Image 1 (cartoon, each protein chain N blue to C red):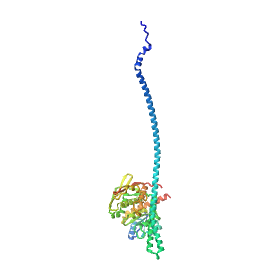
Image 2: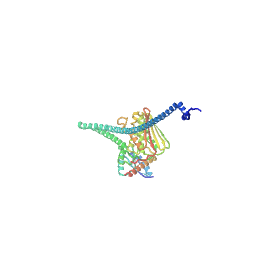
Image 3: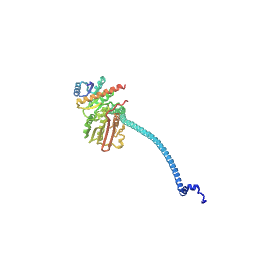
Length: 133
Length: 316
């Protein structure tokens, strides 16, 4: 399977570390950030293909972070991770260009599926961009 | 021997004829006249027929010409109608936009004037009051920004990214996202997802946006207690449908025609920009599909999205 670069953004350390470990076991290149500003900082420094972003975080929340990511790196795909179903944040997130919404707790296979689709989308868009330069 | 003169040869040779003429002459005359008359009449009739045919042909030609002119005029009127509808939509769009932006602007102005007044009056400045004012201003700026972002999203004809999409799974995911909200409102969601639906080539994130919007509308239309039915179906070999039915308040007929217009909303101020359905409409069109609505006031509404199984990306 193709390796791609994933950034996990979640303020819960246990959750973040666990999911990073399991994705690494699947040969993914994974990094973690515990807040929105930290994630933006890391995105400015290095390239990521897909960001997994927790909706509910103290300070800068997931929606605000998503908005900032899409402004700076529109082709980075973002999968929103949410603990509780919220229609409003769902609509907002999708409108801001999130790839998908995943409800916690998530089966790793399901998340992996969505990560792959998000990555494929990014590749398609990069390719399309190259063709139309 | 008699000296009777020999009979006149004519009389001798043609006695029958003369007799015949004498007896039947008038009949023949009448017959002849009748024949001539008939010939004349038929000639006349023929002439009349020919003239009639000519006239008919001319009339048909004229009618055709008139029809062509009328068609042209109709086309022109249709075009003008479309144009005026477009202009009306544009007018509505600008009016809606102005309205949406002017409200937060009014609040911002109020707060700024109040702050200015505080600065001049109270000595020392009431910091709590000032902070409240500034917070309000920030909120309103955010609100305006949301509106312009929405508008840009609406206007931006971004290229759909075509990927394999499992429509049933996508719909189920979005139903899960509204699960808590519907539970709180005692709304039942019935999923009628067709088994073994073919995978379609479409844009997943855009479709999610549409389905989520339609689900949210259904929830809003019901308020409390009701049923939302979500159904997928393979209508034709090359087409799938998603249907979202609610048992909500329904849409009055006079609103139905404008329901997909940008900024058309029946919600109160600040509760919706009226862009949701127009965004859905724009997305589905870009995905090569159609979105339609049927509704009955007091009974509920049904939104039907038809999607092609394969979307070939159009070159911009």
